[in-house]
Length: 251
Image 1 (tube, rainbow, N blue to C red):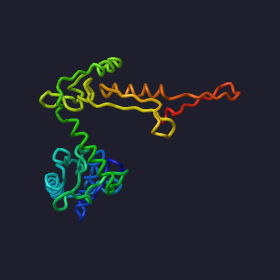
Image 2 (cartoon, one colour; image 1 turned 45 degrees about the vertical axis):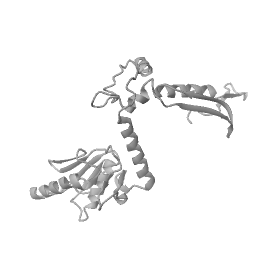
Image 3 (cartoon, rainbow, N blue to C red; image 1 turned 120 degrees about the vertical axis):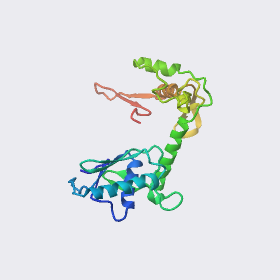
Image 4 (cartoon, rainbow, N blue to C red; image 1 turned 120 degrees about the horizontal axis):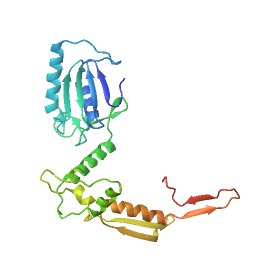
């Protein structure tokens, strides 16, 4: 049965962009598999070996020329009992099939359940921002004198040994990237936390700034927010008393 990572196709459609759109939808989502030469119920349709070779030639050409950004290492063709197109989740979204020069917004598809649909403007923007964020984290850190004492301490509590290589904090030259910088004790970013009186943002009840490893900042923010979250107790005459927090934990 078709699902969010499996698609059946009896043949390459007369309008090839329909199959290209299926491939793009997997690239922009979580990856998936297209079984070519299969009916809607998943039953194999007999095709000649010559037909398989035609499909292989067409799709191989697409891999090198029909999509942007490059998908060369993201799509694999396998001919066994059925013709299989394996599509990996893309790392440089949004992907689209080409239609002339420049960005083709009408070629950006995503996978929703067992179907594809055209991505809207907001979804395309989110993909672009996410890709840029991933690229930034992989860039070389200007500061190479990094320590990870807080991270080591937190991992040690879980009996986990800190490994900068296994954590993808080093580039191919063995130098720290920006992801390492954020986790390090030298992290230059600062988190600010403020408590206001009601909904009036002009009246501060308290405010704090947190520095250090991003992991430490998150722990400090959670600790401070718990201290600032007042608890109210209501006596109702019942054996149990009712307790309420200004901000429920589930929020």
